[in-house]
Length: 333
Image (cartoon, rainbow, N blue to C red):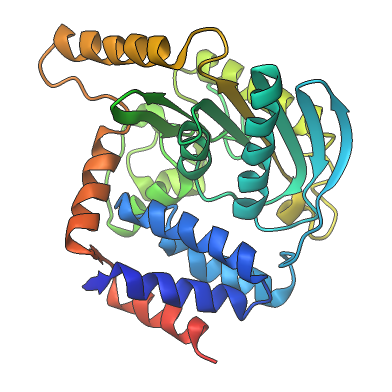
């Protein structure tokens, strides 16, 4: 059903504040959920809010984290996120990366003791809106295997980047290194959909036929050994450099799964090596040449910004009635 975006925003804000977030932090998370929902991807947006609220209520997420700087060297910083919501932690991390970039031309902030960050888009766009190229990586528990090996070996390493392009929309990539995200796979499984056999194997190690089989089996990385190699790099830049957990380290300890996530945020000042005008001219030329190579070229982010503009024009977005009622209940005094 259609829902007014302003009303949805108010429900989110109230629900978060009722779970103990400060007014400032509730506003940051509210805007993240609103903006991701306006992309109309259908997952990694407001659909995740009820589970996040439940974690805050149970105390498995810290509603008022106090971040601690563990180390710093020039343009690099390492912080502890105090088991706060991943959305708040990554907003902070990218903010630090941007500030470091303003001084050094490039900045990197790694965070341990974090949690699910929703998706990459809000944080890399945060950097792009401040004139930086933004890049972010998330690390979680092993949830992906590799052809020839049994079981989950490495995390599926969600990553994203965005860069401003003069008068055009920023270029925005938001992906994981598996062929399909966990939430999209679950959605396909509920719908009884088939999936390509190369997406992974079932619990017997045979190529899958359906999303339900893959839910019970093992996902494979994009490009097989190529995606696996990138996943290892992502583990290095997150779990290793942050001082957080590595792969399945300490997974047997109670509650460790909720604190297994680390993040790496990187920002690059676009006018550090060129003037702002020269950078914008060159980035716009890049996109122009891409679009001219072939009709129908889809630049990463094109779909998202199209949905965002439509949503902003109408002031409405489409959500399931059950989800709306659930969030309203969380927002009630």
